[in-house]
Amino acid sequence: MMRPSTTSATFLTYVRVIILLIFSILFVRTVPFLTEQTDFFQFFSNQVVNMGILYAIIVGFLMTITLKRKQALDEFVSQELNKIRRMYHLSKNIALDNPKLNKWFSEIRSALTEYSKLFCEHDFDSYDLGNPLFRKVTYSIYSLPREQSTYNKELYVSLLTATEAATESREYIRSKRDQMIGMYQWIVISVVTGTLSAILITSTPDDMISRIVTTAVVFNLFLVLLLIYEYDTPSHKINRVYASYYAHNLDDIDPCPVRPKKRRLKRKG
Image (cartoon, rainbow, N blue to C red; front, side, top):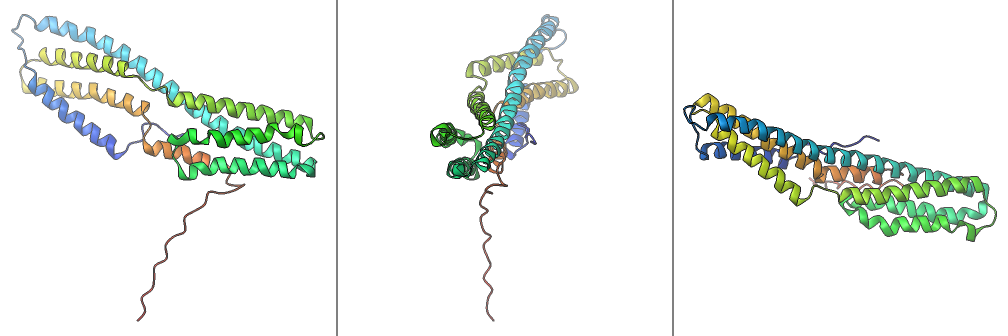
């Protein structure tokens, strides 16, 4: 399965970058500069190094959290889709061994396609809407012993295993989607970034070249925050990519309905 990147650029992403650039320029122009003759020049220079180390530690920590969460979400989505296809094929083969189970298989097939078609119309944000539909799938699978006493035991055990794995994947997906960086972490990294930027500005010599360099560094500091935000908060585009995986997971069974193109009326004469 081709995995989407959470950092896919959108129009709003470029807007945020431009806003950060403008903010960095205004920030540097607002905070007063000290000259090299100031007694505190060396002091501020040393603090830049100290705050830079703290900044790097916090950023590395947050990036590790977001990247692991992104990787885990991709893996669980891929696992659920794989197990759903396996559930279909196993239940189909069980029904082929015993024609009396055709009705049972039809219920599973209908429930699986209904679950997939949910994402033809909804984004991945609406993932929880599939809870009752997926329960319908599992209930149909678990009802087999009540429906028929003779069936392929080995295939049914494999079907139960696949169902259990898909169910666990859904639980992990629902939890990972909600494990975004909290407000407190954002406040901490924002305060550290602002402090480091202020110390960097106040320790910059009062000449044009130094100001340009400082502006570039401050801009990059805020750009890192934007990168973390882009990883931590999937865009609408990414949610649509995930949804398309689900919507087309069982295309060989029941494809997503395609909206017909509007025909242009030909003018007479």
